[in-house]
Image (cartoon, rainbow, N blue to C red; front, side, top):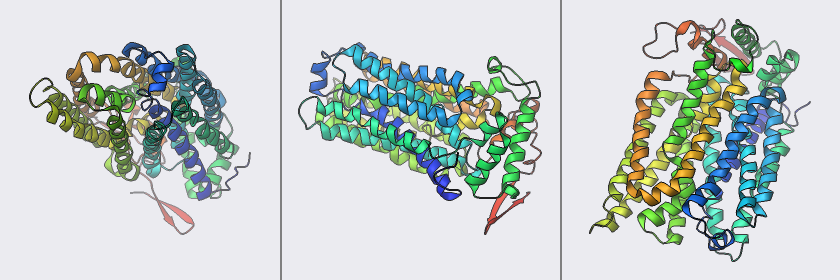
Length: 501
């Protein structure tokens, strides 16, 4: 097909716009329910659910997301990136319609599960698609921008919830849920006008189409050095990965020549870090937390909840512009440390409940919810989403990304399910759990996760060839035939030269 948006910069902008809109939808889905859990009409409609039932209602969405990742494990490679994105948005629309029209808990839960299936397909495909359609030097920034727009979606959801809370009747919560349909519809329209991933096309023996896509995306001829560089790298990577025969799904955890199994486990682990630090305690439940743990009035809690979630968006601005210079490892080091410190301070300040200083210390702890969200947005929010598609070999990228992102949704589900219970029953001690997990991630990332910034997707394979992983204590590192001298592309007018340094 001929892309609607021409070639070069306009087409690159359209690809990024589609991916950003998809992740805005993801963020909106994440945030929209947090602002309606205290709505009186919603509580009356669903029988003032207990904390356990609230956890089931909210976390059913995450269970659907997990199911969507498992489905993508089987359909991602056969269908291709574009078709999966289209399918995910269509499923989200069906789920949003069911949620909007819900009048009892089972109806609502089924709608949330279906919406979750669409989100699981979307989140395990979009970062991979963007990674495969951009230059190495821009990959961190572009995928981080997607995660920035998760924060934009959450912020839109919270403030729309707040604005609608002044209206009477069920429209106060039905309308915010229905707005998902607008975002999903726009994604469906955009995806028809953008090309398939050239790496997916190459992997399915459609080399001519892949070269045509690369030429259109970069606005260059097939004989241009940049196009020849990209195509040679993709072919080299496929040849390297097929040394042990054609990849099959049951080989996903095997220790082969490019250490596919190890890399899939790294992808799974980094997405575990994204969730196990307690982020969805804040995203889903911050108004409830401020009411139950801090003692605020519901209206003030909703206003502060919206402001706290805006920190997520502001923090994400830093990696959007600087992640490729900051590096993946260093960003995770200071990010996890900062999150652990914030959770520690929240626990300390809330531990004074029942004493004469309960009120000022509870108020002071709110500041550390702000720092938590700001640091998370600038670090642990973005690195896992960038890291998963880039750490995986091409042959296993679709299935490996599905497994990696399934970790996000498995632990997302777990945290969302238990949060209403632990904040009610453990009170300030609940925050010590997340303090411990965040601090523990610093040495884990140091010892097991290699740096991938500014490397092409194909060259990352060579970090794992010969038993090395590129870690500080590694023995040696092989490099690819094209990137052995770390090719640096320099734009000079319309020509691209490749300098070897």
